Image 1 (cartoon, one colour):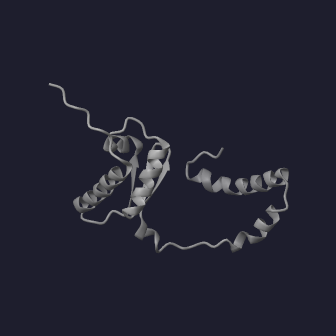
Image 2: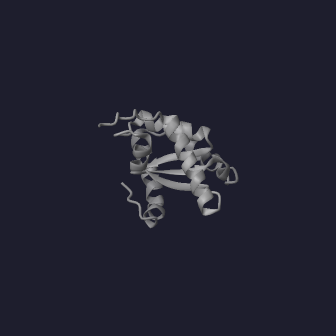
Image 3: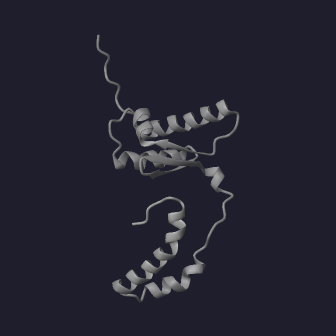
Amino acid sequence: MSHPTAPPLFAEETALLVAHLASMYGKEKGKETTRFRLSRTSVRFLSLHENLREAFVAEFVDALARFGWVAFPRGEEFGLIQKSAIAGWVRIGTKRVMDDQRALRNMNNEQRGRYFAEIQAGLQDLVSSEGEEVE
């Protein structure tokens, strides 16, 4: 006897299930879970989707925000962090780069390319030390 195939979950249903999963994990560990990683494979499994289309991912991320989680795709996984955990973070304003922003308005594409190449070179060591490739 064959079982009917269940239809895939909507993005909001999947997000609610993920928020529930985080809550259950926190209760099991006896502490609040404020951040975690979740593989795309796990999201596909939970959502009953064979593939995660970009539109689904966007809706999933939006729905998670409504349930108190900020999510961002990172390769084959998602990083999730509770919105409340972000509230205490330092807020960085743009005043430190205001002169640069004004200068960019007057640069042609070649000048902009050199400008951003210099910035990237300055960040190269920081990014490389975290084990990430810089392209």
